[in-house]
Length: 395
Image 1: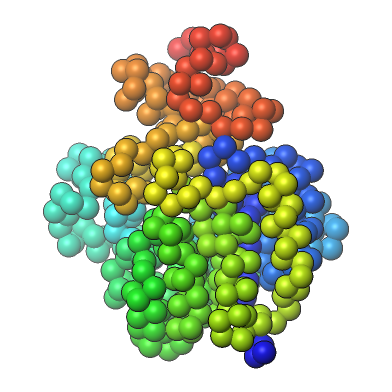
Image 2: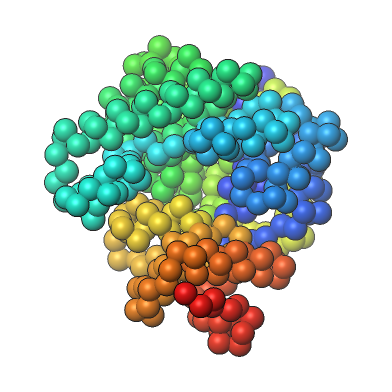
């Protein structure tokens, strides 16, 4: 066997829990985190900002000796960076969209511009406008990378929707961010890559960025995340990000144990520091919890709960849904936001609520979801409203 130096980043407790209907209570999260740590993975991602219980878990795990492995997924704001620092982390993943499609949806100026606020990428956006939103993103990211660097943090940058990003612009991002980061994480956010395109894409990016430290985070919408990840490693990627069991939103993420065993048995590559026997303990524990990824192309894989994703879907169905003849299904739970409720009331019921009412409903629904350890369909949310479990405040 040949020893391969590869950074293994686990997202089971962060991205994995965005799977609709999946919920780990704090005790399970704690047990799972320690089981994952014993496998020798180099990073275990958690997101303190998602809920106070997550921040508490981060502090506890660091106090228990996992400080070298815990990494905080952190929104691109100074407040979020400060919160991660306050939790005691030494390394963070800052994330931001890089594709024109998602930048167009999220640019704060364009959201208010009467000519562009309702436009999508298919509507013939002028090149000058695309250049404007790209430059605004570059400036914003560099500002926050510098801020995190000044706080003494090790930084990874996760480029959301990198696989649908203009190649030259992606090269520009990598080169501009590289002075501040440990790894540039290329995300195939909607799982559109194939093994052939993956190998060529990674090879070309490495050639154009002087062998920058590129890691990959691939989703499994078309069932190719495993082979795509293996091909990325073959092409020269220095890190992989995924979840145990492949759990995660829609059809999930690449399954870390499958990548690690695949590299070992196909190519004779054992990743340095990994305890291969310990991998099974994590997958067996997840199996005992009933935590399984949704099959690609299945109806369950078309469900969306994350508030950020739903917000984009409401304006552009292609933002997080790659199948043209499939209607995304909006669910409600721990990870949902105001946009989920706006979709329910405004698009399904034809009723508009005040922002205060949406925020109140979101907080109450999140509390119920966490108490019952589950997610809710739209019909179930309506039933909660009808039976009084969920109360709509007066405007």
